[in-house]
Image (cartoon, rainbow, N blue to C red; front, side, top):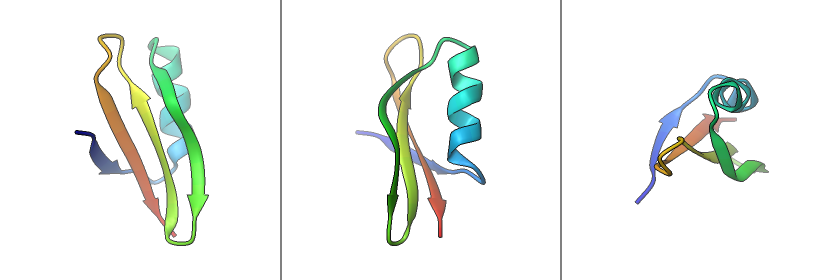
Length: 53
């Protein structure tokens, strides 16, 4: 299960996670209702990011 959190800028959060050794199994994707991505922490836990259009 992946928990999604609302983000004001998905790419900014992915960049900040990369600085802290995060991983990105799903890069940002634009869909009609917004933008989403999934990132992983160093232990492999997935967190979803969501920005409404």
